Length: 310
Image (cartoon, rainbow, N blue to C red; front, side, top):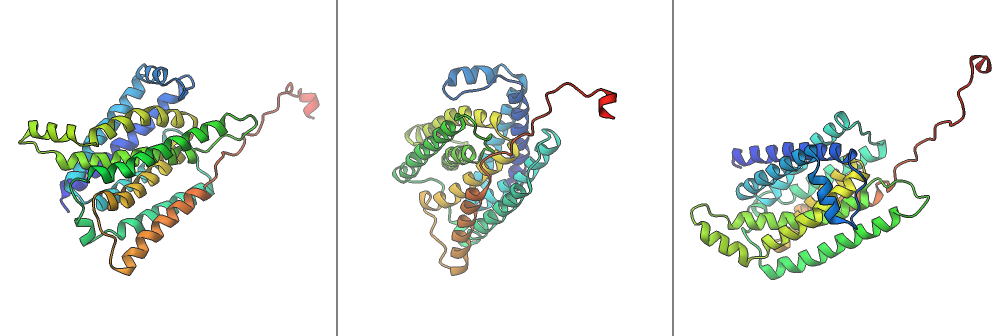
């Protein structure tokens, strides 16, 4: 495993975690965003210097991710990216002051264990067999329904959130929806990295334009920008980002097995690890609380006088 690829993955983790935290801080000071007004959302985001700093950190993380995919197997890369959740949770606690409940912390630990099981199932020969590119037809058969499912799930979460007298959402449905979009984006990033050849730039541009990868990146980038920032403004980063990352990683590993021609493990133990880890991750996502506890109301009456207090 080349060390510079590992270093690039760890750098990507730092950049992504920093970017998400900066964006969350910026979103707290912006007017409420609405997915019904995507142009206004983009305008408000671009007016915030702090948000721009966070987006630049995420863009640098994207560049580091390209380097990782050119160096490391898909499975090993996802295993390293998952470690970034620890840094994200630390930053969200220290910088944003967010606190997770005991049930949420247990769920996040279980998610990490599930992802480790999935990654462990791909170590060895089948991890090294990851192809550089995927057949366009296979990729689109995976990407189009996944994008549609993510958008429908987000729309459903929006409708439920607008109902009166509902508890504030913890962000799990939003995280799953955005995770599906970013899962498709991750497959496209992998495909782009496989086509890059620094010594033949004109041929690279031609191959990219004839492939579905840049168009998938454009769609997921535009939709993900509006949806993720709206959700991040409404929900805690310490919940929505781990859920989104989990869905993205599981989607990338499982669907990458199909899209990039990875065979299922012949070894029964590895097959059990992959299927079991995926099942645990999905079960934990279904079990996580969908709503934050209500904030206790403060007394609204006039303060007691010293004589009344006695």
